[in-house]
Amino acid sequence: MQQQQQHHHAATTAASNGQQNGSTQAEGAEGDGAQAQNGVSEEECVSPKLNTVQQDMVRLIGQHLVELGLRKSADLLMSESGCRLDHPAAARFRHCVMEGEWAKADAALNELRTMLDDTNSLKEMRFLLLEQKYLELLEGGQAMEALTCLRSQVTPLQHNMERVHQLSSLMFMSNPEDLRTAARWSGKGKESRKQLMDRLQHFLPPSIMLPPHRLETLILQAVEQQKTQCAYHNSYTDSQVLGSGGSLLTDHSCPRNAFPGTTIQVLSDHCDEVWIARFSPDGFKLATGSKDSTVIIWEVDPETLTVTRRFTLDGHSYGVVYLAWSPDSTKLIVCLQEEAAELMVWDTERGEQICKVSNSPDDSLTCAAWHKDSRRFVCGGMRGQFYQCDLNGQILDSWEGVRVQCLAIQNDGKTVLASDTHHRIRGYHFDEVQDHNIIQEDHSIMSFTLDLTGNYALLNVANQGVHLWDLRNRTLVRKFRGLTQGHYTIHSCFGGEYQNFIASGSEDNKVYIWHHKRELPVVTLSGHTRTVNCVTWNPVYPSMIASVSDDATVRIWGPAPQYRGNSSTRTQNGTSSASNGRESESPTHAFLSNGAAV
Image 1 (cartoon, rainbow, N blue to C red):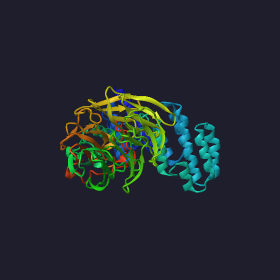
Image 2 (image 1 turned 60 degrees about the vertical axis):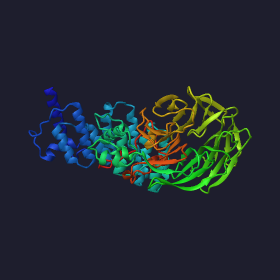
Image 3 (image 1 turned 90 degrees about the vertical axis):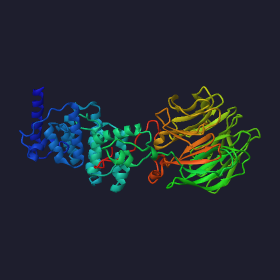
Image 4 (image 1 turned 180 degrees about the horizontal axis):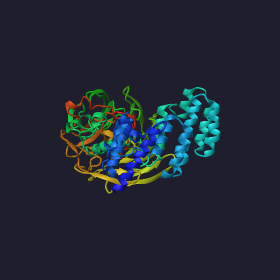
């Protein structure tokens, strides 16, 4: 063991001396020449005995110091530890790439070929090098040299010929800005070469060259894991991403009072039971429907997390059982009780009726869902009506004999999901006249909703509570416990950051909220005095929830007052970039001081 350590130290010293005596020190191997640069004698620099994990940690720290521009500190660290940041050949390779010395870079790449995990990646790496060389020649006005590179070096590789054809088309561009745009390239210089090096590093084993920004990646993973374990994490702000007080020195923890669980408003504008509520996709409006046959459109104030009454939609013949906002947040479908043979579509900007769908006195149109174009929708009911309609109220297509309880349209824009009286959810394609079974439950599916990706469905099942299904694998992910669910129709919802939370009303007059990975509720909200029929979570402002009840009230929930100033932060859900909520992928946070994206 001692002989191995002495040999390793001797090899490191030899590599250091070789670099010091060369004409240029390779960027990326700063630690190899540290002794002479920092005035540390060989006797003073006795390497400690480090195990593999400790050596890896030293290398990670050294890489981060280099990225911060603290090269002397990285050199000293490498010298004292006896570690090597990168293999000498890899360091030379990096240096040549960053300096644009393409012939030397190719020679260094040949030295590395035996160290690659996959020798087939050598051709891809060489192609990336020559692509950069070609583009830099073009941008520099060296058209003939660029053409020679393309013909004699790039094309003979016979690799990624589609990209080769794209590169050849750039020969006729005289404007550098047009060239960069067409090539999807940032231009000659340190930044584009750094991006190139990041791509090339993915082909090199970590023992040869560390993956880019590896320390930041590990820290972000640790923070994301802490967020996953935090029952109340519901914010996009960096201060909460980085842990309490915005520091990496403490574990991440969100205070309970910062989570929406405090009653902000109690609205008593309806004069009978309130059965349904929905926030608009843009987060600026709330619609509530009641047994009193009216729909109230409320305007959301994102600063105070409160709502004010905008106008009332009336003229309905029966109580309102379902509401569906168009994706562009300008239109609202209003579905009435089973006895009604019609539904109405309203313009929510002007408060005017757009159309009415009524095909037969025997119809029952109790649920609906919009297509992505906000111009067509599907509707249906318990008596076997199932239609596709337009904004003129015209029925474009129909499906006979399907007793529909709830509807949704998947993100492919084609598949209509419908729950029926056989305790199942089936997929329907109106254009292809095809249908197929997706979910089978043992009890009646009273209602269901999809997450933003359309990959997961949340079901309220009679006598069973709330079930989460993976639609792609057609598997039951989780049953959420705690609520009381009989045969009344109760509507649940996804919500919060990345839709990581599930909320539902209950027949015991409470609102239950679960983290999607936990069966038991993390929060139970009390305040209503009768059954809570529906809970809706603002899709853009994650600190705002609305619930409606048979007690004829609408309740708006939010954080405690001291947390409302920064809790109304607009979420990524508002720009349709949220993940599916079950396999959340964190947004990229350039949170360390070097500003490098992870």
